[in-house]
Length: 585
Image (cartoon, rainbow, N blue to C red; front, side, top):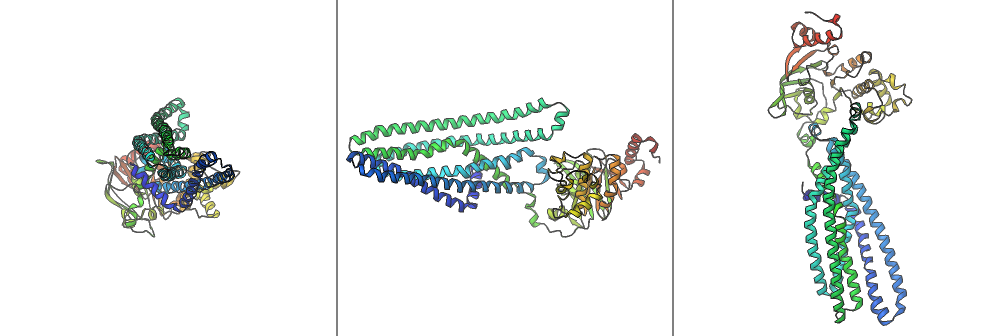
C-alpha cells in the first residue's frame, strides 16, 4: 500500500464531485479575500487615523470591517455546507461501491478474511476518508489560498523581510513533510489494528451463545483487551508523532514572530517601513503561517485518512469474480444435466481433497453424497456452485464447461438449503423472497405451505411481517430450516443443493416437510448431502466418498448388497437407533 494509491482514490472522488467542489471553492476564495480586509484596515487606522488624526475615516473603516466580517461568515457557512454535503454523499456512494465490490469477490476471499475487518474497511475507513474529503479539504485548500495571497501582499510591503520569512517557512514545510511521511506508516498500522479489534469484537458478539455456554466471558474479554491494547500502542505512537510535529511548528511560529518584532522594529526605526506596514506585515505572516499550524493540527486526521484511502483503493483494485465474466458466454436456459469428468481439487497446492470424481446426473434425478466428515462432500458442492474451480478435470452443465459460463447467469438457476441456513434481520416475508424479490404475497404463501412453515408463521401476531432477528435468532432451528426451504422453493431453481437440509428438524418436523422436499426436487437435478441415510434411500444414485475418492456408487438397494462401506454406515446408524430395523444381506 502506498500514498500514491490514496492520492489516486482521492483524485477519483474529486473528479466525481467537481461541480460541488467548484462552488465550494469559489465561496472559499471569497472567504479568504474577506479575511485580508481587516489587516488592510489596520494599516489605514495606524498610518492615517492615528498618525494624521483623520478621525472621519473611522466610520467608513467600521462599515467596511463589519461588511468583511459578515461576508467572511456567510462564505464560510456556504463553503462548509456545500463541501460537507458533498463529502457525506461521496462517502455514502463509496460505501455502496465498496460493498458491491466486496460482494463480487470469490468465496475463497471470505474464507481467509474476517467479517470484522471488512466492516471496518467499509464503515470506519470511509468515515476517515470523509474527514479528508470534507472538512480536511476545506481547511487545506483554504490554507493554501491564504498562503498564496498573503505571500503576494508581503512581497509588496518588503521583499527582503518576505524572503527571510519564506526561507523559514519552506524549511519548516520540508521538515513537516518528512515528519508526516514517517507518521504515515504509523497511521496505516493503527488502521490495521482497528480492523483486527473490530474483527475480534464481531466474532465475540456473533458467538455469544458459545461464550455464555462455556462461561468464557473473561477469556473473551481478555482476547478483546489484547487487541485493544495493540490499537492503543499504535495510537500512542501516532499521538507522540503529531505532538512533536505540533510542538515543532509552534517553535517555528514563535521564532518567526520574534524575528518580525526585532527585524521589523529595526526597519521602522530606519524608515524602511511605517508602523502600519509592520502591523500589516505581522498580521499577514500570521495568516501565512496558519496553513502550517492547520496542517500540524490536522496531522493525525490527515494521516489516518490517507492511510484509509490507501486501504480502500487496495480493496477496490482487487479483482472480483466478474473480471473474467466478460469473456464467458451468457446462459439463457438451464435444463439441469450435470457431469463431473475426472475432477480433482486442492485447497493447498499438492494436497488433493477431491480425487478424480466422475459422475453424471440427468434432469430430474437426485444424487446423494454420503461419507465421513472431511471426505469431500461439501467441497464437491462448492465446486458445483462455482465457489471454487477444479484443480484438474471439468464440470459440465448441459454439456457446457462451467468455466465458460457467466457466474451470475448460472447461480441464478441454483437453489441451496444448508445445514445452518442464514436468515437476515428482517421480516419472514423478506427472507422467503430473498432469491425472488418480485414474488407476490400469494407466491410467498404458496411456497410456505409446501415447506410447512405457513402453519407456524400464521400463529405469529405479525404473521409474515414478523421480524426474525439477527441470523433468525427469534426462531427455532426447525423454523429457520423450513423458511430456508420455502426460500429455495420460491427461487424455482434448476439445480438444487441440499446440505443436511433436515439436520435441524426433529422426526415430526422432518416428516412434515418430506413432501415439501419431494415437491422441490421434482423435475430438478438435486444433490443431497445427508448423514441420515433414511432421507436418501430414494435417491437415483448414491456416491460414497472417503478421503476425496468415490469408493462406492449406486442405488440404495445395490449398495446394500455389496456389504461395503455404505452397508456398514447403514447398519451402524440403524443399529444405534433401532436394533430391530437392522438389515441383513
